[in-house]
Amino acid sequence: MAVSDQIKTIGRRKTAVARVYMSPGNGTVVVNRRPVEEYFPLEFRRRALFQPFNATETAGKFDVVVNAKGGGVNGQIEAIALGIARALVQFDGELVRPLREAGLLTRDSRMVERKKYGRPKARKRFQFSKR
Image 1 (cartoon, helix red, strand yellow):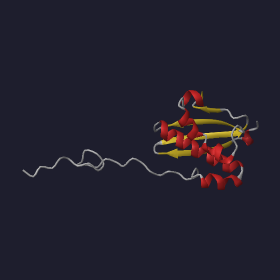
Image 2: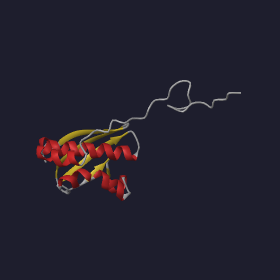
Image 3: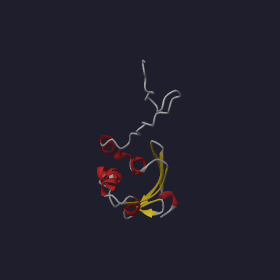
């Protein structure tokens, strides 16, 4: 594998950031230097992570190395999926259509709303007492 064969992309979700390095290979996925089965032991989470490959029928054709940080487990998975989808588009531009139809190329911009002063949380108010 030459360095030029490697595709680098980034995916974000909430406060999670995933740097994805993808290259043609046999389907090995490593997240934070651990096999994906060890890092995400639950099957339904891995299924969400492999959605871009399933949508484009490219499962098992690429090796993926991911550096994920921040956020929680779900945010990291969605950030990785976005990074993989972007890498697939860089690899082959014709894969945009199936990925777009599956909703895998859209960055989910929802973030946690900040806490406001004079309130216990972002929107919750302290108890009001008339008398």
